[in-house]
Amino acid sequence: MSVQEAALYGDLVLALHDYAAEQLAPFSPDKNTDAARTRVDDFIRTWFFTPQKELYGSAPREIIWREQLGKANVLPKEHTADAFGDDCPICQEIRGDIESAEESVDHGYHWLDPELHRAARTFAEHCDIPLPATSKGAPYRRTTKNEALSLVVGLHRQGVDIQALLAQIEAWPYQNVALDWLSEPERNVALVCQAMETVIAPDDADELARFHHHRDFILALVRLISPGVRLWLNGWLDAVAYGAMLGGSVDAAVTGDRIPLTSRG
Image 1 (cartoon, rainbow, N blue to C red):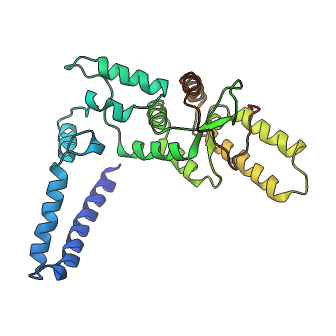
Image 2: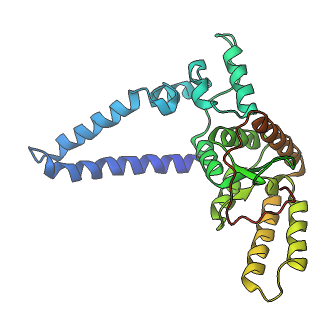
Image 3: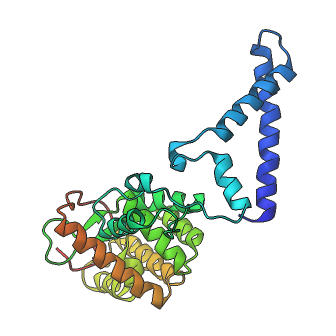
C-alpha cells in the first residue's frame, strides 16, 4: 500500500467515525452526537487492543507496534496448526520448521501482508491443481486454503506481481483456473490451438470463442510468470500433487466448465 493510499484510508476511517456517530445519535437516550462519538471511540479502542483469533492471538495494536519497532511479526508456534493444518506436504514442512525452532530464534515465518491473505483466499476458490497422469478420476482438484497460502507466499518471494495475477484470476469469467496454465503455458496454448483446428466444428462460433478466450488468457498469464518462476511452480505442483496423493487427500476432484487442456485422465 502506498503512502497516499494509507493516508486516504485513514481519512476514510475518520469520516466513517463521524458519520457513524451522527447516525447513532438519534437512537441514544440523550440524542447527543458527542455521546455517540464516545461510544464509537470505545468500540474502536476495544477492537484495537483485543487479541484476535485471525491475528493468531495478537491484538491489532501489537502487530502495528512490532512493525513500528522494526521487529518481525513472527507466527507463534502455538498457532502453526491454524496456519498450516492440512495434508499439503509443503505446509507440513513449514509447520515442522516452526515447531522445531528454538524459542529465542526467529524461525523465518512472519505475518503476511493482508493483501496476500486475500489473494490466497481467491486462489483457493478459483484455482485447480493438476493431478499426475497415474491418478484416477478427474484430472484436477481444488486448491486447499493452506496450499493457496503457501503458493502465494512462494510466488511473492519469486518476485511475481501478486496483485496483477489476482486481477487476472478474478476477471476470468469461467469456473476455475488450472495452475499448469501458469507453469506450462506454451504446452497448454498448443493444446488449445490444436483443439480449435481438429476438434471444434468450424461453425460452432460459441465454442470457438470460448477456446479463443482460454488461449488469450493463458498468453496474458505468460507476461506475469517468468521462465524461472515456472520452474519453481512446476516443482511446487509436483510436491503438492504427489504428496497429497500419498496422503490420500485427493477426494475433492473438480469438474466444471474449465476446458481440460491436458491429456491427463
